[in-house]
Length: 456
Image (cartoon, rainbow, N blue to C red):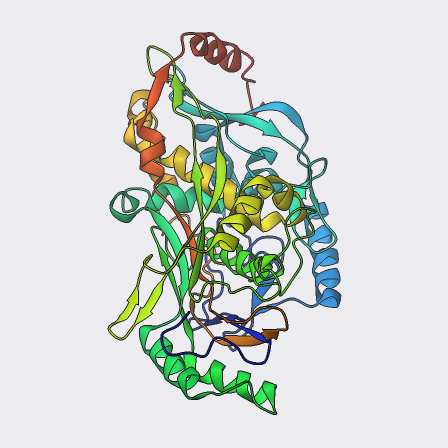
């Protein structure tokens, strides 16, 4: 509980959390080469079911607009060309760069934008003879779902995207220091104002909605922080959108759509007390990479997403991170989130998009850290040159207004759900175990390379 705050407001539990991100920048997609218009095929600024309007406000898109968006994207995808499925697809980075050059100033074809339909990268092969690096993994045909997401036709999971690969390759060196991360947190000043307001309240009052609005005003805007990748990239928007959706699911503002994953608030028992300052965040983990003896073949193993929690303490001197009382309900909710993450990613593609971005960051760390481009004799500078190959620039989320709601169940306060997404791709790319069989897998994958074309 917050110090000095009454434990009960007549049986109401008041939830104070994030609502809608507000952004300050209004740059649209720019430059030739990508041809994706701020997200591809008329995707605009929409990522993960949220969109940023001309005034710089991010909102969940209403159902009618999503249907229209879906129709627009399907028409654009039909013009851009089909991507065929494959149990294992090999994508040549050397060939990919040639395909980008061949598009000149026109829009890129769908197979380039969606990396030939790759669903994930399971192997990275170095080809010194062909001066190439080859990414391999399962691939599907790309389609547009009912709410406008680009997804695999069979799994309904989103494919990898070229702009996320470019963002990862360009940012990976800077990510050494603090990793890649996103958080949405209240300001210390806002929490101090809110604490003072709550201490003065004897109850929720005759007009509960007015009380809630005063709480929102006291807490003020919450701060969005993105690190490790530029905030104006699709990669960064995926981080923010996934964090935003996780908090809305956790706080009961929208259903997960997954049996076994209720909201955090629904798990608080009647008459129970939830944590005052719960933090939820997502972290990936991987098994050690596998490599052949010559370090020319690499396999990415055992990726999992984990939800973690801790409770902050609001004291007179400010917020003390992780020093609040342990919250058993929060731990149970995180355990459910971890257990059902894959099922959630199937229902809400933004969570699969998050995994895709994490995989591509690990691939970028592997290429850069092990100097695979040098070993291959491949100059990947064209992929790193933001002037010659610009990616769409998205508006940058800076702050999020607060929304307060009430739940007649508990006997205490839940004051904001902080946290986010954090991971260090370099940690996953440095640990490797030898697997002699990968040398044969590399030979088998490179052998059927076609005389023309950049994937097979």
